[in-house]
Image 1 (cartoon, rainbow, N blue to C red):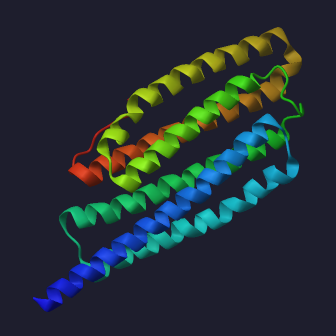
Image 2 (cartoon, one colour; image 1 turned 135 degrees about the horizontal axis):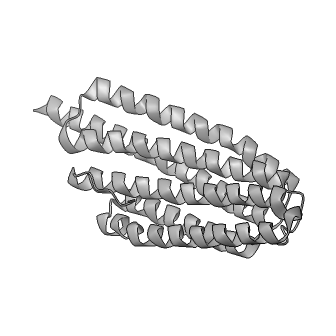
Length: 224
């Protein structure tokens, strides 16, 4: 009986350590994302290059989470909800690593745009969409931290609005490039930034789906 309680305690400690690593990884990704939005609005080569470099520590956190998760599974042999929580932590870490890659790509693309103020490239719309994507990401991570399925499920409606906004901005950019061929090169890069922001919102929704799975053991698709 004592050994059983000790094993339970060790498993709980390991699960908490794993979750805290994921949350720290999330904090770093959040900070990078906010700096990327600043980079879109006002091109800053130093800021953009630092975002690209900062992607590396986040990748290291992902590697740490993966190793820790596999170690806990192998050494503690968790079952049922314990196993789900560990697997979900590893899956969310994978989503965070990809979001961090997207953030670094935004910085790379922005540095390639010749217009310092992105004039004619729907910068106001892009910034608004970026802030919406940041909000949905933060909500998804709050849902994970609190294991709140209600907050996780609320992402579905928000993500649908982001998809609609993305389509609207896409049409607007295409229209401006048709009107002014000089915008085509930078406009194409702005479209890539737009697509990348949408992908971040999609991955935030993936995180929310994992929260629901961790809490209920049911797979639910929030992103149609």
